[in-house]
Image 1: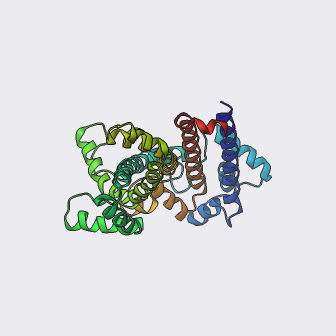
Image 2: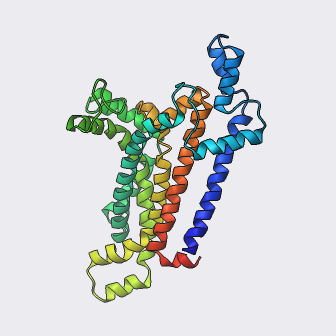
Length: 325
């Protein structure tokens, strides 16, 4: 419990620091969102309207510390302001409408890449020098060296435009009513294949190599030799002894990857016009939508910290040795 409380204190401090940076950075940037809205309105806004917007968006002439206190109050009450690019929609509403698609895309790709990559790494290390160990690592590393957007555009052109096997944009077909129907679920799955496939292809090599290297080190441990001397079945030794202990670094990587899923695969979402957080973040940057940028950055940061805290708790369960650290 002391270990968990120490880690919780660390993450709370990190969260406070991220909130503070999230507050300061947009205010140190040149210009402000109200001036941009004033320019778009072609001077049709009255002075009292401008002042009301500045106060609404938290960029008025109050002292910085007063703005900071108000910002903290809004954050902990669940109010992140109003989006400028989608005015007058609240930032929380914009994020909540997009984050589900990002979790679907990133979560699906992460689970597939982690499970398949780790299994391939286990088999490659257990049968070191075999066909899987010799052929797959260089091929997957070669594929993983390509940028996301390059593979995404290639898959889009080949499987979407030339062959016509999969849809080429958005998360579901136009005119289809969202709902828990087999038609809608199947359509969403068809739109998910290409963007998820590009993420899996780029990341699966790293999962495989990480597990393979850890498994090779684990196979040289004395308890593996003892298990073999006892005459245990090779499959049991591989899964119950070697893989179980070699899995610990992958648990940490999975937790960190799960946190960064919320950030979205920006370039992949842009290529496929997938309505996720990454695509929305690009629109916010292009439109100088500071409240939405702040809300997205804070959501991503909170997701990363929460995922890492959960991994720390799980690590204590899997490896009791860390409790004394």
